Image (tube, rainbow, N blue to C red; front, side):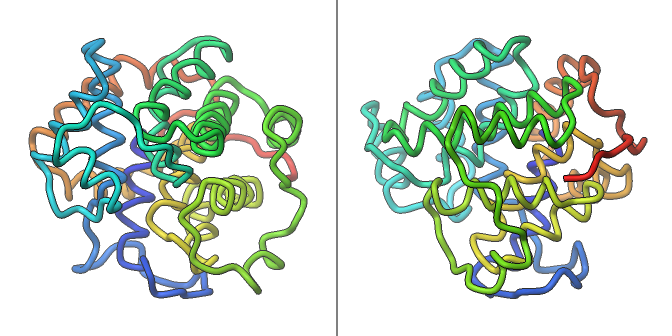
Length: 271
């Protein structure tokens, strides 16, 4: 899930700027970790501890307030509500990457992705976005090539992944819906040449930059791994408590990935 965290932190500076370029510094003084990182790690800890996810999301929200959460989530978590609020927003997809790393079959990934979404995002689009993202991570880490990943996402989830990134970029606008940001984030991965290029692709669309880079970055980690320098810099933004969870999750699940070796590029196929 470090790919998702790194994507979030790199994208944080570009949130709301509408930039349409891939040329920018990866890190700077204005980068930070947002709600994408906080809730990704909350999901990871709930998997590690087999703990109630609603409690985990509530606790992490109160522990790390003012991290850019959406208004509905603020109300839900702030009041410690337990009923979902039927969201179709991309918050369900941004936090789901640990599911793609932690479970061993597609059925399990589908089931647990729905579970992590439905505690808040029980709208069909919220669930679809989380499942598509988690399945892409799973397929990438278990050795599927890009064409197989593309075809599976199209066949199972019905997303249109046929429009090239250059055409998307021309007219794309800020969109926080799953249906308006998850397919584009997956295309950013499909057209990427490595982890860094994938994150730059996602941010260059000029949309919900941190979340789209988080989604694309999680898939890219599973496919290529995260370069050591990017991983080290991204983790430097986290506090000790977050780092402990990330480290434990990676020690338990990262070594099982067949599709990527950290720091070692994987052979690629044409998108």
